[in-house]
Amino acid sequence: MRSDQRAYAIHALRAFPALLDLFPVRNAPGQSARLIGISLITSQTAPYHLSDFFLFGRTGDMGAFWSMPLDTLNMADVGTQHMAATTFEKYTEFYPERYLMTEYLRRMTGVRPEYSIRGWLATLANRLIVIDYAQLDLYWPKYWPHEERPDLQLGASRLLDTPLTFLDWLHLQAIGEAMYDSCDVIDKLNPQSKPPMRVSDLVPGNES
Image (cartoon, rainbow, N blue to C red; front, side, top):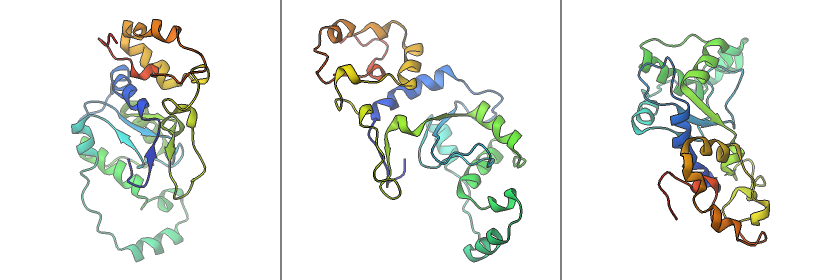
């Protein structure tokens, strides 16, 4: 995560290993598990534009993604070419997000990926998971100082108002009968009280 951002819904992170188990990579040489990114600034139509705000994955895959060669482009030349671009491909050619993604794929496959939406959608389908950034309650004061999701913070809302997010639901698919741990305790709580946990707190083998 960027150093100028903060995630308040940090309990969502506990569901991420389950995401990796539930959605293994497909046709992804060099990669052991998917990388999890966020929707904010990840583009559907600008190929290989994966948001660099947040990334989660296994240590080896993360190390490989961020070990790109140094970009030695001259910024003045980049600006000139950017302003003169007449195609979408040329306009996004020097975007850092595109450089990170295409360099990673080049090192994993030995071939620089062809610039196409088809290739990008295949990468999304086979190598990546993208979650809605709101589910992390990502706070970015630089541009969006007034956006927040306080309902996703642990203890920020009444038990009665605690939402079940997609990540909570997905976590249930991976933890088996651990989902029943602490249910009896929560059943007896006052609905106006603050929740002591979220679904994503439940892990296999947790008896408390």
